[in-house]
Each structure stands twice: as structure tokens, then as C-alpha cells.
Length: 222
Image (tube, rainbow, N blue to C red; front, side, top):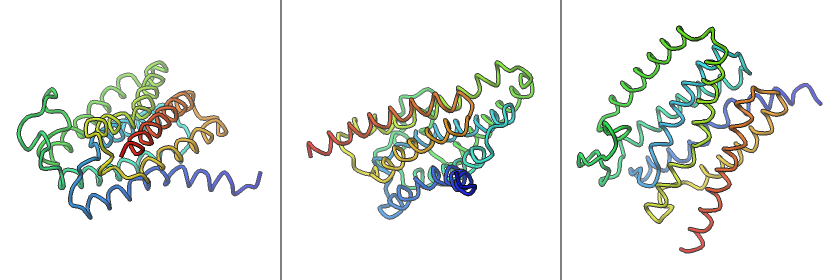
């Protein structure tokens, strides 16, 4: 194998996933409306990648995957800001009608999301300092991070089901999920990444395929 191929693959792994959301963000800004895109996607990716950074501190996996997490956090903070700024007029927080405990992830201002994430990072840091020497804790941390990320398409699937429509959700995002998860599944096995990455990548790819199938059925009915 040519020596440059692993380098190109690592660069693609680091910057590819965050770039998947560029078209979605541009679409929301252009329409000035985030209807159709689930903000819970941002929640999953932010929490999962923050947790993955702590997992890296306990188990130094590939640097490309750590860079990917950092870039994804930045990308999702930007996308979340756009979603909050251009939230749908009928969103629950506009009417104080959230059915979630403490209105979780349906807050009115962007600052409330940042406050939650800051608190989450602080709590994660404290727990890591206490339990970082435990191999079991680090292993569980990895499964939590990657397991949570593997559920990524589910909130969007629920959102589309409730709307009975794909309006507002970019096909490029779905294709990015399927293509990106296929690539990273192969990458994890070839690079000998920790077990958590392999197991959760296979599960996430299966969920992506289910989402793709449901999307095709909705499109066919239109």
C-alpha cells in the first residue's frame, strides 16, 4: 500500500464528517427557517464528541479521530446557533409548551445551550479525574460516547415521521451519513481502532440504512 494512502484516509476521517453539515446549514440560512431539521442531532453529536475527547484522554486512539471530534464540536455549535436563530415559529419553546423534563434542548436562547454544555464538560472532567485510572470506567466512557453517536439518525427519523414530510432535511446530509459511516467502518477495522469504534460504527451504519429506506418510502408516496 502506498505510504500516502493512510495519510489521505486520516485527513478524510478528520475533516469529512464535520463538512457533511455545511449544506444543511447553508440551506437553513438561505430559507431563514430550520423547520425539518432536528436540533437533537446537534445534541447527540455535541455530547458524544465531548465524551469522546475524554475517552481519548484515557485511551489514546488515532489522532485523526480526536481532531474529528474537535472539528465536529465546532461545526455543531455553529449549526446549533443557526437552528436557534432561525427556529420554526411553531417550535415548543416559542409557546412554553415543551413536554420534556426541564425543557431539555428546547430552550429559548443559545446561551442556555452553552451553559448546559459547560456544565456537562465540568461534570465530565470531575468524573474523569476521579475514575481515570479505572480501565473499566474508560471502557464504559468509550461505549457511551460511540453508542450515543450511533443513534444519530433516530431523532431526525422521528422528526420526519411526525411531519410526514422530508421538508427542510437535506438529502446531502443523509448521503453524508451513509457514505461517511461506510467509510469510517472500513477505516476502524483497517486501523485496528478500539472495539467501541467498530461495534458502534456497524450499528450506526445499519440505522443509516434504515433511515435511507424510510426516506425512500416517504419520497415514493409524494
